[in-house]
Image 1 (cartoon, rainbow, N blue to C red):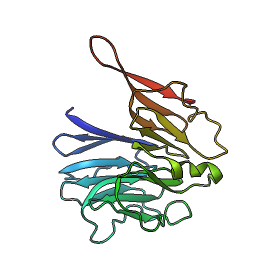
Image 2: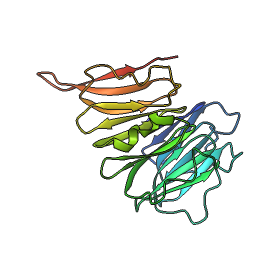
Image 3: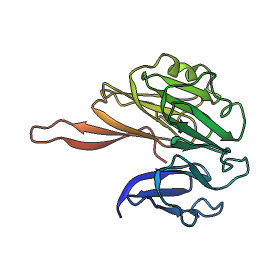
Image 4: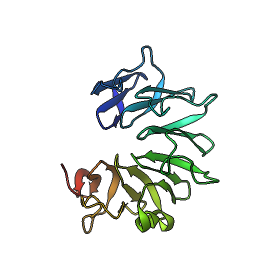
Amino acid sequence: SDVVAVAAGDYCALALRGDGTVAAWGAKDFGQCDVPAGLSDVVAVSAGNYHCLAVKADGTVVAWGLNNDGECNIPKDLSGVVAVAAGLGYSLALISDGTVVAWGRDGNWTIPMPAGLHDVVAITAGAYFSAALKADGTVAQWGGDWGESGGVAAGLAGVTALSGGKKDGLVALKADGTVVGWGPPYDDSGRFNIPAGLSNVVAVAAGQTHAVALVREPVKSKAGLVFMLIGAAE
């Protein structure tokens, strides 16, 4: 009870309580549900494929779970963190000055980040890619073997929220309540076949083979909220 935020990974789920403590459930084979004893003052959480991250009120980060690629090795002197994103074997941290720090698996999809990345207000991490939402409503994307389809982010503007799936793909919520989705050319799950006429969206979330949109339906008496499933569900 008293939950204020949740995060879902591949094999575990996290709940952040109002008192700053964290509850976890799911698979425990890599320790991803073993919340460190005494963890408190948490303000944000993220669950990756096999590891989890938590931001504390003092701007520091705590990590637990699989650490094969150094994804749980918090960089020395890391501070001023306001958000985190856990991917597959790597981690991202958004700093209060709008910059991003990454650690863990160093491959052609995770690290390094685009040179000069700044003015970031939100981050997301998938299994094979990362993305950042900038203050001007544009999106910076790196990683993933997406070919030309990865270029969607280059011309995208007016974005207010961003969600990366745990495999390959992103959905972006625009200020006008519409949704844009893109992914690799080999994707055939249909998760980015955005329903025709989808509008009045207030939140989005991308899974491994699907995406979900929260729609505000205008009615005469009061506003209602409806969940819309986008793409295939397995």
